[in-house]
Amino acid sequence: MVSHTGRKTIKVVGRSPIKLHFTVWQFVRMMVFMEDSQNSPGSTKNSLVLSQRREIWRALDAKLAGLGKKDAQAFSELMMEQDVVLEDVSLEELCEFITAAEGVVKALRKESQAKQRNETVAAGLIFEFEEMQVLLKGLQRRKAKISGKRKP
Image (cartoon, rainbow, N blue to C red; front, top):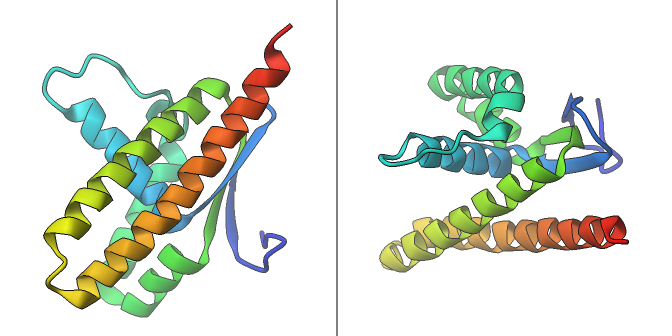
């Protein structure tokens, strides 16, 4: 499938009227954050996103792992030039994505401050940090809009 921006997309159908678009690298960052959070010591909450979107996540992760070993250019193109489109996302899943995006932004801020001496690494982290902030704000606006519609 090709999105209105001309980028290739991965389309996933779920359960409700919310539709989310992520660049693959953003989706990967958030899914890894969710996995790490769920697997951390003392964690008692299971992720709805990880359980509901397991198939797309595993398929994408396997594809990235394979490309990472044999085709750096294709790996880079998949990560940076393609989108994951999730349709029928529940409000609870949206909230999990917001929490994950907040965690990724916090981690990127911390990581970029620690790596400021290496300009190339710092520039990449700053790019990711800024793009994740834009994504986070968009997700938060989306939640506010949806939550406002549901109030009597």
